[in-house]
Image 1 (cartoon, one colour):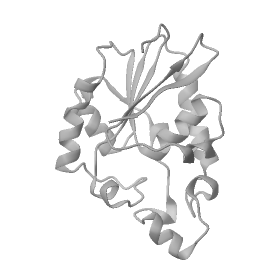
Image 2 (tube, one colour; image 1 turned 45 degrees about the vertical axis):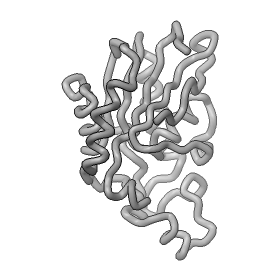
Image 3 (cartoon, rainbow, N blue to C red; image 1 turned 90 degrees about the vertical axis):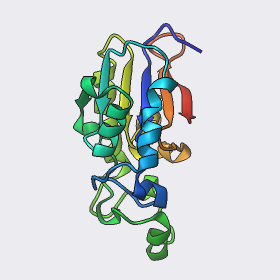
Image 4 (tube, rainbow, N blue to C red; image 1 turned 180 degrees about the vertical axis):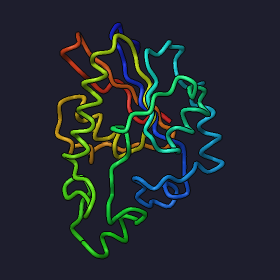
Length: 193
């Protein structure tokens, strides 16, 4: 399904050791695994032939390297607001380990000790959305799962906490756009692997 309106293509970075083990990877800058690199090389072949008006990336090496391996490194603009959720005290820790200490904890509801809340991440997403809506053309974005989940909910006007209802696999492609006109933002496709 194509659209006459601009679209935003979201690519989650390739696999890392921490994404494989379920460790929260916010600001720790770890590389892609060999499997993550291989999957990143295949991203371009999974995208339609679009002359993107812009290509943006999170500052993390995992997002930037996914972008480069997909063939878009020469056009990449790094946007700090595309960074993954700052997990603070939960950086590098699995959800299972956090729940052992805080049995009722939920990332999207409770946020992270010494890190960001969903509202903090939502504010960054809103700034990116404002920039995107000023561009006449489709944009390709490389970032991380939790940020992109919040970003998608904000795109359609939902609270950032609703990102809990979405999931993203590594090197998945999702598409945001519009239905009838630019006043009707929608999620056109989600978590395509």
